[in-house]
Image (cartoon, rainbow, N blue to C red):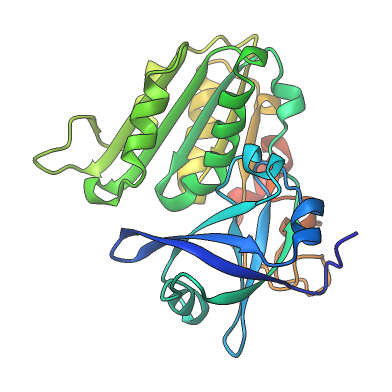
Length: 281
């Protein structure tokens, strides 16, 4: 069993500059035995540690198919917003860093079997959902219709455009994109992501919704889905908090009676519905 307190050494294999402030780092654990034993579920996260700088939680973007190969490449998409993330995005191939994880509870794929799955995301909050889309596509016959709805503040903020276009070509798959502020080349919806929800092929008897992104966006989207007939129990959210230990000891990610790091980051909407509207949580 991997020790949850000790980081494993990883090497940067590839660095992709997604936008001026967003970078995807592709990592490989340097210990072959650790690569063989490592597995994570879609929606979980790792703690990335840079010696002399600090440690931050970052969602794992890779699909589970990567973990079936003992080379084990882990993709983490990082926005430079603080001391640690600003240092991480500067790493080049060959650099070494620490990885602890995976942590948390991922998306409820067991409940999604045989159902339509609607994935609604906002901003870079889409990263936790990318791995679940990969898994849905990998096991396509086990699920019904798939909808991927992504919203960004500005059209220039949309990353992974080729990936969305690839998903849109798959059978029984709907991709809807929105930007609050469009540019001359934007050909999708202009406005809030919630404005796209009426376009979903929503069979309320056999659907499951997975949301991630800014909390106001998730709350508005969840409430709109409920207005459209979806039961609150059919909605799942991926929460973000300041996670420092990742194992429920430090208390920084306390969320009501729960800890986001070990009881989440994925929660059923009824469990967090009231907390989303409470200042301080």
